[in-house]
Image (tube, rainbow, N blue to C red; front, top):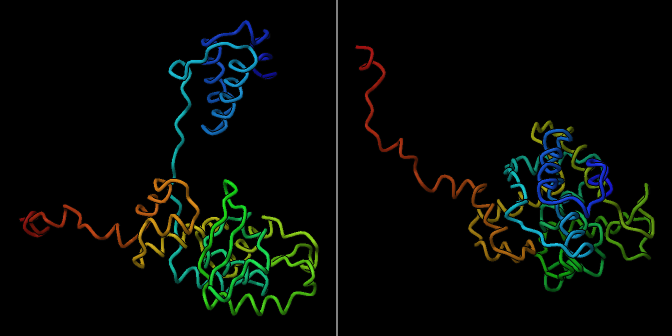
Amino acid sequence: MERFAQHFHCSPDRLGTRHIREYQAQLFTVQKLSPGSVTNHLCALRFFYIQTLKKPWSIADTPYPKKRHRLPTILSQEEVAQLIDAAPTPFYRTVLMTLYATGVRNAELTRLKVSDVDSQRMVIHVQGGKGRKDRDVMLSPKLLEELRQHWRRLPQKSTGLLFPGNRWHSGDQPIDTKTLRHACQHARRCAGIKKTVYPHLLRHCFATHLLEAGADLYTIQILLGHRDLKETTIYLHLSQRHLHATASPLDALVLKGRSQQEE
């Protein structure tokens, strides 16, 4: 609100829709902010005008900018294997395997505890996920064996954390999300992968590869913890099986050969 008032050198209660639209344009053209950042500014202004000034707010007059939705570049299963095999430390290897095998979010992985690994039912309990919702994800036999070896390597086991923090992984606090990014970056360089790799990409790979293997969207929605199935349908755009299921209309055309055209 302070920046809005300073821009016009005037108290916000004396400014109206025209000024809000002008300020919105300035955020785009001068400050070069992204649509998401501009939306955050507008939400703050809307809250102030409605809750504090008790003034009406018209979304039609001050529409939120549309976000640009970019599809992530998915790693093939071969590239995921190369990434995991290239991990420079056993700890990084376990982190990468867990991200890919479960599809959990970054913060969800950092909060995992040993007690969340249920080897009897072969599931991992994800507690307090996005929206404070709990869910279960599958526990791969390969991941279970890797986690057991990882647990034996940990110098400090009393905290109950699956991925304890600090340099020696012996702290009483979990690792932070920076560690996950470093694991991806180091492994990508060692594997010689040119694509950009980050922790959340392995979540995208998890869902896309499941879809390509024949899993249905509803199952993937539950595993990812998506509230709306629309969030999960993005993987239809990424799955090679779905992209190649329909032939291009070009293949149905009867075209003259190049040699015939030259004649």
